[in-house]
Length: 328
Image 1: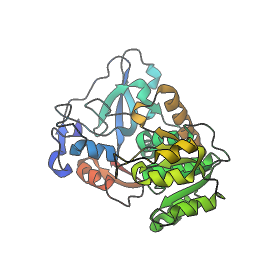
Image 2: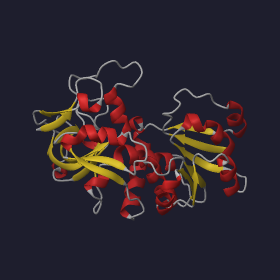
Image 3: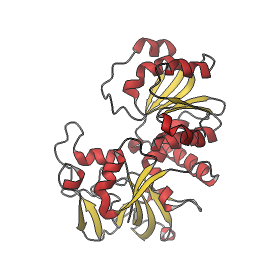
Image 4: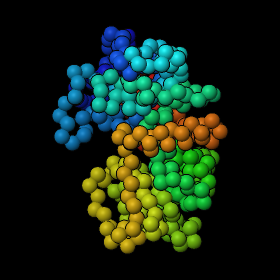
């Protein structure tokens, strides 16, 4: 079968190549998914580039990248209900701690990691749910009901942020989002009650003004390091920061005093290692919002499998309006 893989770190066009490999067979407790789409995320591009500290070479002889995807179950291993054959599914943690991800015509993985897609939800949308979807759902609802709360979503035009805006509005919150001015209308259309330029010199003052000085109950944060001081000023006492990224400053200096005297909770979100109960809760929220039409994952571009290198470049390009997918 056809698959995209790499055996060394480097620039996408230099190391990603099309391979012909054997069709895998599911082991006990596994299903095989005939893939229709593979979701490409920034974490995939970073892993392929070798940018993670202390990691000098790929963990496997050949890495078939990507953790997200969607398709149809066409084979099962021992112990799996035969009724699963033919199910349309979406995948989480496809390439997490294994060599074989979703950038291929098929893959095998534990049955629970192939989640039944609700009727009416496209395979394209399903291929966005693993990382962008679960990250948004857990960041928004990880602390419970948000009805009546005020949520701040940093980077409301990004793949996670755009989902978070939609989910927070659906959950009954007042949503304040930050974005570039060119994305204001798109973020408002997603459900944001207020959108502010993330570069505004008076960003904190604007947020506090919109909350009558009380601050926000919960912040969904894509750049925790550079926004730590801002968050200390705009999150209310006993509020929560759900931080899922800090790419621009991975070793920030925290304003501990303001965090301490507001008793602000910093919740670091990494969906790869979510425990079973919160993952199930996030999946339930995603499915409910999708079924009700409240969540419409944005897709920036769909490319062919052999264009994987271009997809890795796209996903790291600023101004992207949604997920990048490979059509298998």
